[in-house]
Image (cartoon, rainbow, N blue to C red; front, side, top):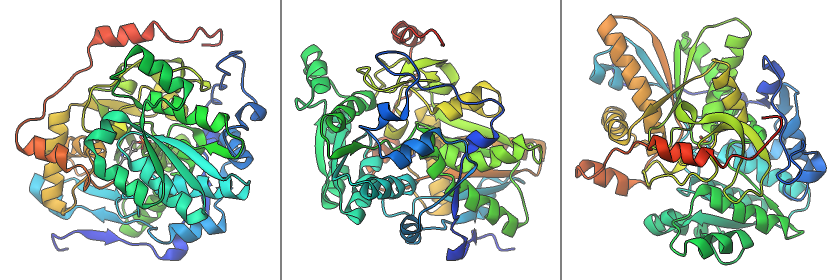
Amino acid sequence: MSTDQVRFTLPEEEIPKHWYNIVADLPSPPMPVLHPGTKQPVGPQDLAPLFPMEIIKQEVSSERWIEIPRPVRDIYRQYRPSPLVRARRLEKALDTPAHIYYKYEGGSPSGSHKMNTAVAQAFYNKEEGARRITTETGAGQWGTALSIACQMFGLECTVYMVKVSFEQKPHRRTVMETFGATVFASPTSLTNSGRSILANDPNSPGSLGIAISEAVEDAATHDDTKYSLGSVLNHVLMHQTVIGLETLRQFEMAGEYPDEIYGCVGGGSNFGGLAFPFVRENLLGHTRTKIVACEPAACPTLTRGRYAYDYGDTVGITPIVKMHTLGHGFVPPGIHAGGLRYHGAAPLLSLLVDGGYVHPVAYSQLETFQSALTFARAEGIVPAPEPAHALRGAITAALEAKASGEKKVILVGVCGHGNFDMLAYEKYIAGELEDYEYPAEKIAEAMTHLPDVAAG
Ligand SMILES: *Cc1c(COP(=O)(O)O)cnc(C)c1O
């Protein structure tokens, strides 16, 4: 075999026809979602002002396979099936006996995996008569994906973008506006949530949690408007399973199977999408793949957060869910992996971490960028800073294999390209990036504000 990349490309007919719902195979059922006011389990009617009914059904479904609607698959065809690549040049650069494969989602119209759920969510909203969708975005990848999907289905899109990113990443905002979205720097003075934050801190840099409060409030107070979340929720992780389902087929073509899987975690959607079909194989007793969730040391939700009930947003107007959390008051430091700066994590992923089915690990910013450059120079793709955390995990494993002479097969999720992250790369290359560990006392402080929940 040559030392060049080997791509495993599936034909169009092999785009999955169903999403995989891991709830059907979990060892224990997920914990109930609680109403922020009553602290009692929420019912479909509580969520109806925010989401279309089909999405609500998917959120609480325990059916194993859910059919992907035809119009959604038709749009998936623009960029799916995505390639699985054997990273031969990276293996050579590391001089490792390990086989390294990466599943690449950077070829989608928005440049990340987020299109997979944006298209599905826009479709169901259109079907059920919404005129407009609101959302939040941090680094801008989610807002971009949703604005493209809204444009495809003829919906308006309002994006509350975290203020620091709005200022630091003007091109991201322009991309969203190119696709017809209206973009505000959050906190705004347009919502009660935004005004309450600004009253306390007129210079608030914003956070994902604050932007969620604003987008939810906007949708809840307008009849023709729904809200859409790009990560964390069960239905979002399920939409992303097209990634892992394709990868299972591609490994059949390759005649191998991964011993270890590395993905990055912000809210958990690209990770769940890649890993859950493989977690299923483990749960069924077919395989014993080691599955590793990689996060930033500056926002160490899974490694240092508590598994407890907490709000999904900062202000406390969203439902309360059981998840790993750093506390909803957590304001993350300005690291460059913007997509990984969230105080919580997906309940489904948290449950698997708590049960020992998924192993979390945290990496600091500098070692992460070092791995990003190693990958970029070997494979010719600039990864987004988020999947660079997964690459750090995979490269560390490949170097361990070199030391021990072990021939293992490593799979890593490269869920987006970093072409809009040149400011971060520029700083790293100039030696100006710094490491940042979130101080234990700040985590402890944020924990004192968890909601008081009997079931917790
Ligand atoms: C949004 C985003 C993330 C983080 O979100 P998850 O839900 O954890 O996947 C990671 N990488 C990229 C490229 C993203 O756009």
